[in-house]
Image (tube, rainbow, N blue to C red; front, side, top):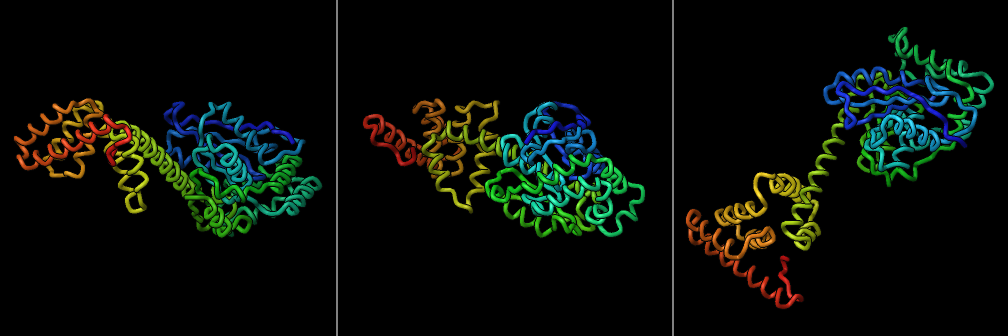
Length: 407
């Protein structure tokens, strides 16, 4: 087996920047990257995705890619696509593929989860057809050429009536391009599909996935695409009404809208994850690992959203803002908790204040000052709690085996 040389086209986006997300688009067997023309145009017109860098890559012997006389696997095709991505700047990327292109996209996600940020599989699968059926297809093409596939492809690729409505349009152009595909390269692609099976790897896949199907697709049916999505954690399946196997060509606007939504959702999830990580670092620095570990261990499905909220917003945003030091924030927090009568939180934040550099005298002074404005009973209760914390700290210093249950 060999890794073929692939070529394609690269568009930097309306606001070129190396940091802009990269979307790699892969076509189906027998088609070229022109399959994505309508989708790319719609993505460019959408403000959410106008800045995308878009890389379209042709299969061997299809479109711009040179023919290949040597056999290859889907894994080889994935490595070939990765080589093109690296030539275009490398890094992480989103990938979307149709049919065979979707299989290659899935292989990339399984083999390189550190590189693939998001996955879109349109009318594809972890296994498509059988080895016998693809071997027969390869033999037919070697004997009669890709021109012999046009009639059958027209019925498989498009929904009833589409070509009549599309006279002279992208559907007809796709069938014309099929005739120009290199016969041996097509046959090798078919045989590679016959050997491809990633069904056992779906459950472990941890890449945000969108599965698209066409209502009339008899090759990769909506039911099979739903099964695919069910096997991938968090995956979403959408069936496009009135479309068939080349749904992205038949319904480019709807496809682009779904891809844009998918990429935006991924971006938001990444931002939330970064904020959560930042918040967790601040939370641990202020409250201590032991306290945070207990809070995390006590999290239930009912409290998980709240824990994420306070980690991201309280600790990741407010506590991490640069205009007040953590010492200043401890002063404000102690005064606020005392004023509000939130005694259950005071001990934790007395310890936090000590961590943030306040002395015991300064903490007492904060509570004395708060008494002037919040009232004596509230400040007296807070001082009692502070004295308990100080006593626990003294005991722990004298005997390290003794520690507060809230340490």
